[in-house]
Image (tube, rainbow, N blue to C red; front, side, top):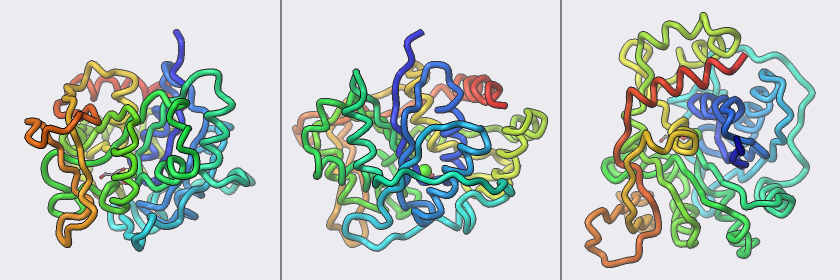
Length: 305
Ligand code: RIB
Ligand code: CA
């Protein structure tokens, strides 16, 4: 089986941690580089968390630290969802790992040039690093197969009434990405709010080895849903689309990012009916086979130690 080589840009983040596990242990994927960005918590914390996860799973995927703030706005975080550390609830052991000396967008550029084939960018945090890459190295696009994101919403938001967190934190970066001409797959809240792990499955996690125990401990502090009603696996959807695209129903349409509205900045305007007569620039996931998703999650997490 040929594996899909990917770069994962992330702001761990408890649901990011599950996505990182799937990216590491899904046999269909080849995780070449992890880049961190400020989002759920500060970039120092998201970088520390990414390194802790590499140590936990004894993996040597390089980690490059990225942007500490959005392009033009102040950082607003989601510590209220993930805890002050960004991965509250589990005591990771001390280690001597460090990020690369390169900033994230430089590390991505270097990885793109070192690869014999175009790489897939998977983004599960604000898009600041990708916007910096596109601005600094406009010809990077020929080296990128596609960008699969967790972000946006064709409907309501989860950070403002109309904006999803990853887009709302850095709307200018997101607008740059959607205007770039890259092939984009957008896994927004339309599917990620459906992507829930059931309370029954969550109860089995402590019996699933070290990974299950660690995730169960983190999940007890994760506030996108609850252990008794189910937890939303937003970021895992981006990995699921790569491995099991048949679980998703997508619609090719034009997506714009609002950057000026006092109340609507960060909103992804998803033109499903083509009312704006603009060329489609994204495949937007609107439907999810929830049972199939849950089966895949159980399979892929069982591959982790
Ligand atoms: O809206 C959900 C997104 O915001 C996820 O990426 C989660 O980790 C948070 O960053
Ligand atoms: Ca995230």
